[in-house]
Amino acid sequence: MAAPLRVALAGASGRMGQMLVQEILAAPDLQLSGALLHAQSARLGEDAAAFMGRSSGVRFTADAGQALQDAEVLIDYSRVEGSLQLLPLCVQRRLPMVIGTTGFSAEQRAQLQAAGAQIPLLCAPNTSVGVNVVMNLLAQAARQLGSAYDVEIVEAHHRHKVDAPSGTALQMGEVIAQAQGQRLADVAVYSREGHTGAREAGRIGFATVRGGDIVGDHTVMFCGAGERIEIAHKSSSRIHYAQGALLAARWLSKQPAGFYGMADALQLR
Image 1: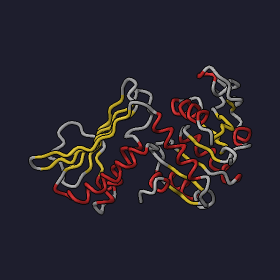
Image 2: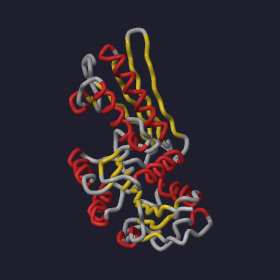
Image 3: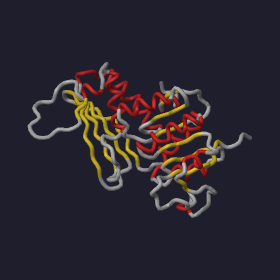
Image 4: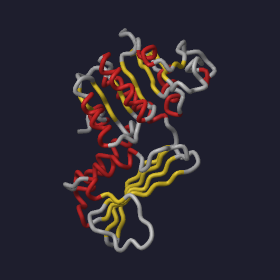
């Protein structure tokens, strides 16, 4: 039997981090090898599985070198600044990197793509298998319906989410724009207030909801004359994000250097 794949986590005490710890410990082909937190965390030194009432043998640390020392792949669900700080260290160590962090600017995303020339790097605003299947459905709908249908994207997340629109909503917009031969930057509308006038044809609108403990809801509306088509994905748990991230980590650990997405790992392209 092959040795378990050694997985390090960044952002290991967050909502996604805890779900990943739980899923890694339950998987016979995976081993938790490191758990990285920011230097101000009050949980430094704790066992990474203490929240489950058990021991993992891995303690939270702010020392990136220590957290990555034995890793064969890193899954990063920290924040943009943390991801960018880890990037050169992963390149130096030739360590495959799965990034689930969202909120990167175009310039920061270019840094990730550049690193993908040196290491296997998978960047995914959403690691859910279901969401990535939805992306394929959106591309098909956008091609078939064309400019005769107005596109609106509504997303809802918990009160603690720091970026808006969500990375998933933006990716949905990019998929639709590309399917219609457009650039999202040229057609996106992110806010409406006051006397806005009539809606311009060909625009892709975004609306954001933040509140409570909503895990993540996304609805895309194709609004035509006399009918409205809605394609939606609603999350009631983060477990499917964690399972998708681990699927991506298993796949990425066997790939050459490159900049990948979940569509590559799921062979949806």
